[in-house]
Image 1 (cartoon, rainbow, N blue to C red):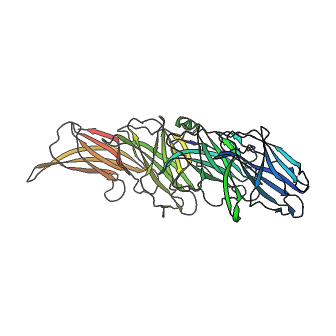
Image 2: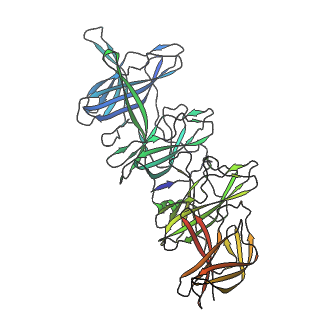
Image 3: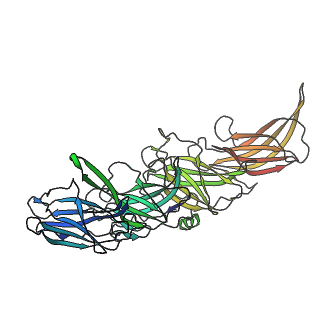
Length: 566
C-alpha cells in the first residue's frame, strides 16, 4: 500500500496563487454570436480515427438568434480536410444573452495517426453552381499531447502534484487541487483513491462539474470514477473534498493522472432512431507525488504526547469542538505468537456545550522500514449509536496494531475518515512519534490513565492435601499507591495489572489479572493476590513478574513493568 498525505494550507486565499487553466477564448462567428472551443476529440477506434469538437455559442444580442448553417471542418497537419457531422441534439437557436453547446463528430477511415491543426467554419452556398464556399472563421489548434493514440483534446496542460487548476468551461470557476493519493484494494483487486480539494472563491454557490480522474501507466489508461454520487454544491468560500476511485491491476505502476471531462454526441440514424456516443477529453495531466513511506514520513511533523492533534480542517468526521490527543503509544508482547502489539490510546475531550459522539476514525502505523500496519479499535464502536462525550468531559479510545517482533523503531501515526467514502478511507491527520521508553521496576509505573507505585512486596506459600494430589497456593502481597492521572471516562480500554509466577526454569506456573475498575478492582494500600493450584512446590529462584495487560481484538497483550525474585 502506498499513500501520499500532503499538508495543504487551507487558510490561503484562493486568489493568492493563480491555478492552472486553459483559456476558452471567444471569437466572433457572426455579428451576434461568439464562439469558444470547449473540447477537441481525437482517438483511434476500430475502423479508423474518430474526431470531434464541442463548441460554445454565446448570443451577445437581445434577440433570439438562429444557429448559422455553417459546416464545421477539421484540418490535419498533412492538409487533409474533413467535415464534422452535427449532433442530432444540437440547438437550432440561442436565446438572448444566453449560451448553448454544440457537438460535432466524424469517423475518418485512416490507419495512421491523425494530428489536428485547424478548426474551420465554412459557409457553403449550394444554390449556385458550382457551389461556393467561404471560410468564416479558422482557429489554429495547439500540438496534440495524447499518449498511445489515446484521447487528447489538444488543449490539455501538464501540472505538478499539488498545483491548483480550474476547468475552463466553468463560469465562474471553482478551484481544484489534488491533495492525497493512496492505494488500497477491494474484492475486484487494487484501486487508487485520489482526493481533490474543491474551493469556491466566488460570491455565489457553484456546483462541481462532471469530471473524472484517470490513471495512466506506461501502456494503459485506467478509468476513474467519482465516489460521491449526485450533485455537489459548494457554498461561497466553502472548501470540501471529492474523491475518485481508479481500479488498476496487480503490479500496475501509475506514471501520472489525467483530469478528463465527458462529452456526448447523438447520431441520427434511419427510421428516426438515434445512437449516443459518449467519450471523454483530457483537461490536465498531473504528475504523481513521491509515494514512498520514507518520503511521506519525511514530510510529517513530530508529535509530542498530550498535544492536540491537528486534523485536516475540511474533514467532516472529527468535530472541531473535540480535542483529540495521543496519550500513550507502547509495544506489548504476545507470548509465542511471532508478533508484538502496539497499542495507541487517544484522549478525546469535548470542549463544546452539547454532547458529541466519539468519532469513529481509523488508524494506521507507518514504520521506519517502510511497512504499514492497520489498527483495530479495541472497543468496536456501534456505527448506529456511537458513544457520547458530555461537555467538559473526556473519553479514552484505544487501537491495537500487529507488528513483527523486529520492528521496534520510531513510528508514524496516520488517522483516517473511514465513513464518508466507505468502503474506502481518506487521511485526515498524520504525524511522526517516538515510542514511549520502557524500563522495569521504575516507579511510578504507567497504566494509563493510572500511575502505580509498588511501595513494598512480599511472597509466601501454603499447601493443601487432597485425595488425588497435593496442591500448592502462593500469595503475592503488594503495597500499592494508585493514582488516577487523567479524568477520562473509564471503559473496557482500561488496562489491568497482571501478576505472574515463574519458576527457576522460566516456566510460568500461575497468573492472575486484576482490574483497576469494577468488582475486585485494585485500590491503594496492601493487596493480596492469590495464585492457586500449582502442582508442585516451588523452591528458590522464583520470579514474580508484574505486567500491564490489555485485552485487544487480537487477544491479550502484555508489557513487563516490574519483576521481583525470591
